[in-house]
Every structure is written in C-alpha cells, then in structure tokens.
Length: 326
Ligand SMILES: Cc1cc2nc3c(=O)[nH]c(=O)nc-3n(C[C@H](O)[C@H](O)[C@H](O)COP(=O)(O)O)c2cc1C
Image (cartoon, rainbow, N blue to C red; front, top):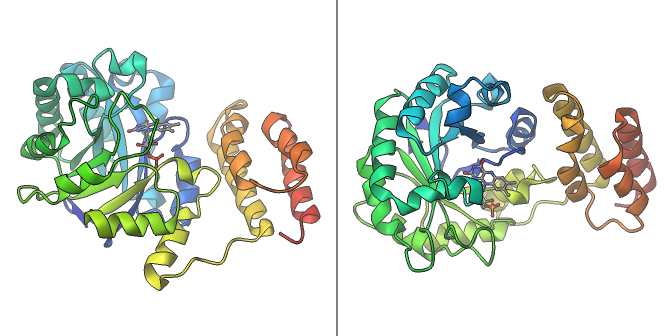
C-alpha cells in the first residue's frame, strides 16, 4: 500500500489514533509488535496555535516510530491552516484530519464528526490543509452523521478530489458513538467504487486475527486500523500477521512474557509522562494484560490503584512468580 510516497507493505495493520492512549510510550510497544503505521492522539488546532504546552508535546515524533502520522481537528479553517503549518514543522510522515470524533463537546461545535453536518466546510477545510503542507494528508471519518445520512460513498469521492492520499472509515455513524457493531458493508462499497483510487482503511471492532482476515477478504480493503483491542495487548499486530502468513493462530504468550511486556510498557510510560500520569494511563492496559487470571483481585487492585512505582514493579514480578502455570 502506498500513501503518497510512503511505501507500506501489503495489508498493513495500523494503530488507531486514541486520546490518552497513542502517545509515544504506547506507540513504542505497538511498533515493537509490528504496527505498520501509527497515529498520534488527536491534536486540537486551537490549542496548538495558542501554544498550549500539553498539546505541543503531542507533536513529538521519534525516528524509530516512522511512518507516523499526526492527527489534527478543529472547526475553524484558519486555525486548521495554522495548525497544519506547525505540524508540518514537527516532521511527521503524514497529517491526518479527524472528521470522526463523536464526543458531544467537539462534534456539536462543528469539529470532528460534527463536520459531517457541513460537507462544504469539510471539503474546504480538507483542501486548505492539503494546500498548506507538502506532507500527504489523510482523513479519518465515519459513515455519516446518523442512520438517515450515511453519505460515505459520495463523501469519499469528494474527499479524494480534495487531494487526500488515504481515507480511514470507522463503520459507525456519529450518533452510534461506540454502540452496536461496526458495519463494514459501506466501507466495502467505498473501496469497490471504480472512481476511488486512494487506499481505503477499514476500522471498527477488529479484535482478533480471523476477523481481520475476513474483513480484508470480504470487503477488499487496503488496510486495517485497530483501536481498543490493542489495550494491554500490543502484540495483537504480531498475532494478526502470524495468522495472515501461516493461516494458524499464534501460540499464546506465556504469563511471564506478558509480565515482561507490561514492565517495559510501564517503564516507557514513566519515561514519557510527568507526575502520576505515567501510572494512571497504564491502568486500562494492566486490566487487559492480566485478564481472566483466577484469584487475581488483590493484584489487580494494586495495579489499578497504587501510585507507588516500586510496588507496581514488585507486583508484576510477583504475578510472574505465582502464576507459573499460565
Ligand atoms: C479512548 C479512545 C480515544 C479515541 N481517540 C481518538 C482520536 O484521538 N482520534 C480519532 O480519530 N479517533 C479516536 N478514537 C476512535 C478510534 O480511533 C477508533 O476509530 C474506534 O475506537 C473504533 O475502532 P476499534 O473498534 O478498533 O476500537 C478513540 C477511541 C477511543 C476508545
């Protein structure tokens, strides 16, 4: 697959942009297990141009992560142009525009998925972002605003005409938020539209290798993007690739291996984040790393409540020591 001049292997696996999740420490983990293209958390154009420190930090791109995209969003075209220029200076490999965020305070202000209610503005904004950077621009969006406005097939053509180099589609409407099941049939329709030339990346509910393969076969899409299933399971990229290559499920990791991965992840998180954030943001991952272990409550409570770094590492070692048969 090619996005602009960026050559990526066939049927690549992408790490979805996720706020408070896809920062450099988690990207490090996903890259280690084979993510082919990764995105930053979304970056608010308004905050960026006001030089808000936390937002500026989201522009950090480390060389080993490449190819990596920075995602921006906003409701004001001039701010998006300024943000585009700032992001370009940070030298990611591509810029992604978020037209998919369903969160009320963003979408009802006309940003993210809110832009699905004002297509002329969405197209103008896309053209301006494309015009103001030499980097390839991609878009991530949803099927439409609601059940009665699933406009993605026509919208995809219009966005392509604005000069974007790839389109990611999450198979839900804005009003669905994250409810129900993602519907991939329209993603497939976009891909099989003869007028579409750019790569189409499918997204929504991929959480195992069989499903990933099925979606590629059934809908003929160019790439798969994975979000929530990566929590506490950054090796999902490796599992899927193994299945693509050998048509068999990869041998599950041992608990000892998972503990080593969790320790590395915790160290990276502490390196990257200040204060207790490095610990807080590990909590959603810890719950997943050690899912379904019997009599685990005490360890789980420590992992999701303690703010003592040494205690966290000791608990992880203890888990490896106790659950030897897993
Ligand atoms: C915690 C969280 C944060 C998210 N943040 C973003 C974001 O910053 N930008 C974006 O385009 N999508 C964001 N998403 C949506 C995901 O990128 C993805 O489209 C969605 O989770 C569906 O994919 P999945 O079923 O594989 O998780 C977020 C989702 C979650 C759960």
